Image (cartoon, rainbow, N blue to C red; front, side, top):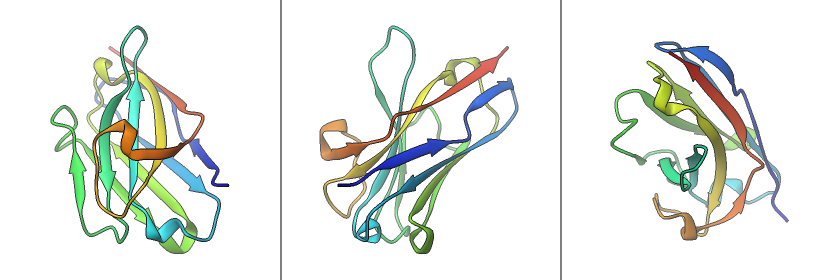
Length: 124
């Protein structure tokens, strides 16, 4: 069983930065791509960023490209999301997820394990 635990959320002013972390259990972390998704109140869950198994390939939603950076440390079973130039519309619960395969993916159904989420609130 894989467990994912997010941390690092909080309240920040527009233009500020936050770094989200996701710690994964299990010995096969480095074999799978990882992703970040978010869900704002009243909206569907949406893709934010994905990173392949080695960290060499990354894929971003257009809405965060150039502002967010996804990274991973396979030795520490962790994946990160550095969020800069935050906007009020970035306010959401952010979820870490493990992909079913090794390559970057943007569809939620491609992910089989999910964390509990961490709240990010950006005040304008």
